[in-house]
Image 1: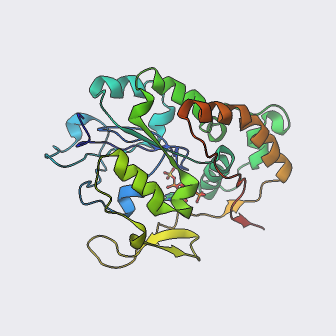
Image 2 (image 1 turned 90 degrees about the vertical axis):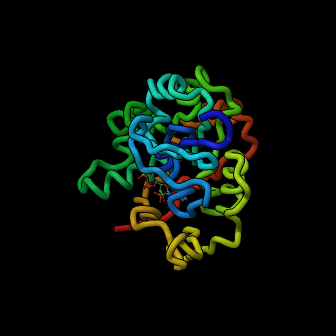
Length: 267
Ligand SMILES: Nc1ncnc2c1ncn2[C@@H]1O[C@H](COP(=O)(O)OS(=O)(=O)O)[C@@H](OP(=O)(O)O)[C@H]1O
C-alpha cells in the first residue's frame, strides 16, 4: 500500500465476534465491520470486494482502500499471501475477551442451527474432558498463536489492536486510535455517537448520506445463551496463558474486561 494513504481492512470475527479484525491495503482478520460500515470516514469508502487485488477498484490518491475478511486472521496462508501482495499493508485486529467471543460465536451458530448441543458440550471433549481446540469458536480465541503466524511476515508496528469491548464502551476513543493509525485526521469523534440503551450499543447520530441515526443491524448484540459459570471459569483458565502471551507480544497493558457473559436469555 505504500504509506498511510492506502489501507485495507479485514476482520477478526475478530477477530470480531470479533475475535479480531485486520486492515491493510488488502487485508485480514477477525474483526470489524465497525468502523467504516457505520461511520464512513470521508477518506475511506468501504470496499466490500473479494480480497483479490485485481478485483478491487483503483484507489485514487488521498483515498484509503479497506478490505475486511475476518477469517484471514486465523488462516495459515493469509500472512504470506498478503505480504507478497503488499508488505506495507496495515493490519487492524479487533480482539475481545476470547470467552465472550466464543459464546458470541456459538450464539450466532445457534441462531442458524436450532438444536445445537450446548456450549459446554462443544467446548470440552465429550462435554467434560479437555478443551476442544478443534472447535473453531475456541480456536479463534487463541490470539497469540494466530498472531505468531503473522509476525513471521509483518512487524508489530504494522498492527493496530482494537478492543471489541471498548468499541462498545468508548467507540470514539477506539476510532480515534484507528484514525491515527491510518494517518487520518480525527474526523470521527464523540459527537458522532450516542448510546442506545435498548440496543446496548453505541449508534451513529447521523448516518452518512441520510442525516438519520443509524444503529448496528439485528444480528449484532444478539442475546447470548446462558452458559454455566463453571464452564466459563474453566474456559477462562484455559485462555489465561494464551492471553498473557498475547499481552506480552502486543505490549497491551489493559486486558479486556472479564465479561464472560453479557446479555443472557433464559428459556
Ligand atoms: N461496531 C461494533 N462495535 C462493537 N461490537 C460489534 C460491532 N459490530 C459487531 N460487533 C459485535 O461483534 C460480534 C460479531 O458480530 P457479527 O455478527 O457481525 O460477526 S460476523 O462478522 O458476522 O461474524 C457480535 O458480538 P455479540 O453481539 O456480543 O454476539 C457483535 O455485536
